[in-house]
Length: 490
Ligand SMILES: [Zn+2]
Image 1 (cartoon, rainbow, N blue to C red):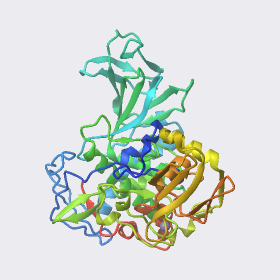
Image 2 (tube, rainbow, N blue to C red):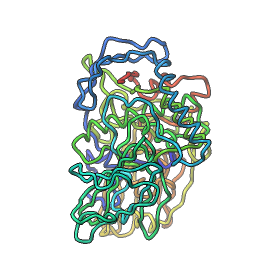
Image 3 (tube, rainbow, N blue to C red):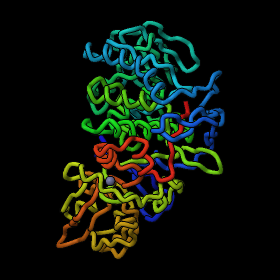
Image 4 (spheres, protein in one colour):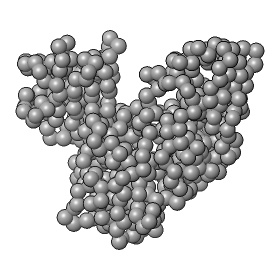
């Protein structure tokens, strides 16, 4: 959910001597580097006057892409219309059935790049799966273990002596690929914390692998456009304007491509939770339908900025509401020192956000509870004693806190990124660092809060607010990512 989006990509400039505990993992997904394989600019330009990026790009520069025999230079609207058709068929069938197992995944021609690999779950106790058509189960070397697993649940469990246990199979299998035939979705449920999770339907294929902890890792290999549609459905509010949906689709696609390039040698490209982009498989409700239409309309479009004549993608961060001004990535010490992410964008459009997102507080927390939360995430703060002071030692333009110094009764003090502090305290209670914070009579009082989220990049409620005033997706993106333009990559 967008309001829960609290990821931050930071860790590049340590400002706290405390070491994060295990729970600190989610934002590591965003510890990024500049793209090593910039897109090469082509000669075409978008003809519709809505999007200004170059179309007809030469795509061979990045290993993500394969050259097409005939590069597409089609008009955006034309491309959107064409690729909408399979989606419409998909949704018509899906909506009528009311059951995700009754329809096929989109027949849209795949974009010229490999599938995006999404980590659905790690450290799972068991996995079960089924599909309305035969499922091929292949082991790592490609040998077909079963060519006809289908309607009934098949359960996979870790073998206590290592590897996976599959019904009727000998031991020693460390990983399998599940490939449903005829593009039907694969329904998955995972067993964790003594219960089976809600069933979710996934396009593409799913890889299961035993990990070192004798648990199972679940990775979905899905075509980028199906992934984008699914992400948009979870990252916007259902009532958002269609142009906000379209803007979200473009940045979800850009962000995924950026991660695919950066993590091409890793086991997966991106996680499925709030630490990256929320992905819960196929959705067949109205929001899913609007998201699929937005993905189809913007098919192949990404945000880029130009460096030395080359168009480069960048990490298109976004957040729920900026509260008045966007944040710079630079002050967090990331490698994202690119013009579109330098912040300072004044925005009052997110005023349309529900109460609690644009302005919030005061929030009162016992100081003891706050220290417990900090220590849970940063265990070596245990020697800190009770909280004695919290001071803002650096603010960004506009007033958002960048770094805090906290002092304890042991005499120790620590400096830490305000965003790290916020995530440790709780992103629902401390919705942004654009606030005042003070210690009074054993309580921490957080007040005058503005915005929701880290404040980097696009302000989602602001995008909706602008769309309500008639602003198109391309303009919205140029507003929140200064210097960016839209580029068609397929
Ligand atoms: Zn805003």
